[in-house]
Length: 524
Image 1 (cartoon, rainbow, N blue to C red):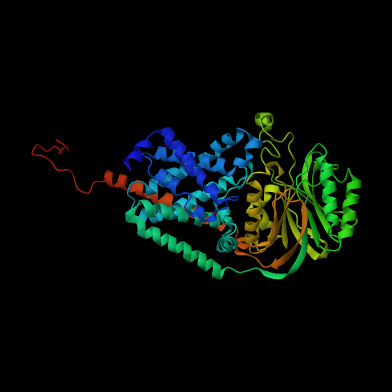
Image 2: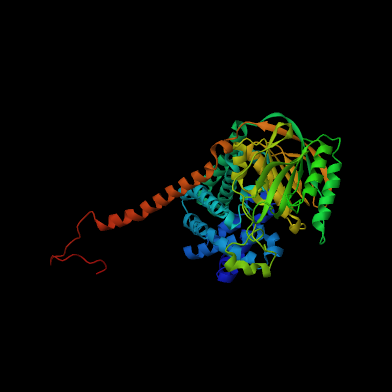
């Protein structure tokens, strides 16, 4: 133990260990998808911050771990952002500095059982504040939230219907804290075990109590995935491939056909010939077609990324313009200062324009769908609002073709399972190049994944559910609970600091005096 402490006495070695410890949770995300590892992946990071010689060093350990976490979870962005990914990770890593400091404050040295029990509540609450801060769209959005590692665990998906991904993140961190206490603080093993038992009990209670979606019927939704199409004329050839695949649906009686993000590279107002071709496909298949246009609009200035519904007579007028854009990928924040990013990576040459409101579309056959585009499916509030507005099925249109050989396609597809479980609504995740997937109202997978090597079309039997999940009804209540826990902790710490000072200012007995009537001086 002394050898390890001596080795970690070097600030540089300690910082490297902190970054590596922070990167460990990436193995719990797809593609490795070792979901069980998430429950112990933070333990090395916690033990490192706990052992810091000073509070300042613990804050550095939090920062280094946050840097490692952000780089690992977003490593697939390296070809697009180049060195920018390290700058962004360094800036966002600062969010974990207070978390590292509080870890040492609560668990450093030989904490009492009571202090360890407080840590099991306070540290997960602090982690939620970090996730809340970096979930802001301007900071890149909620990609890589720790609760997302549980996308294929049925009990966890049931919890998501109660408190969303926030509740999952809280419980995962709480288990990590309890395990860290269990292996490092002998005196506090009882509250650590109690915390693990309480977590298991809460999971079981949610399993039994949370209402299950009521399925009213089924609809047939077809996903068209053209696959990778390269070259200078890739837009035209991709459209031709989508047209060819959609024609195969004639006679299969789908209720809706979904194309991926940027499936049409021209505004349909400027290209009525393309609108006529899509309308003809609608007539052949007997279903409306949801396409996605990434182009300069003909009716207003600027480039928009939009979901458009096309029926047998042409565009129906149902349109959703993407509201939350990808920083650097679709716009450059503070372009006057950071515009040089276009010279070192694949940053947007021109900013896309934002939509102003979410839309629930009325599709033929009486179906109401809620479209989202690209990484909007990572935002739990967007799918929640669509469910509140009456969407029966959620539809995400995406394209991860720039990251085809990375973990990004699998990570993106897994988010749809969480959005489905949170809202009690089936979610269709349709992409250009994979992975496309469909998840039922409980987050369960329906039908096959269409992988990154597939150029195909598939019809899914999609359950249509009704009812309101607790998450849709009550929203992000775990975040509010975490704020209350942190406020109570800060108040308690403040009172502990003030009380000794008050006691010192008013001694209970007067000082003793000598025979010469002068106060005794301590130490004399």
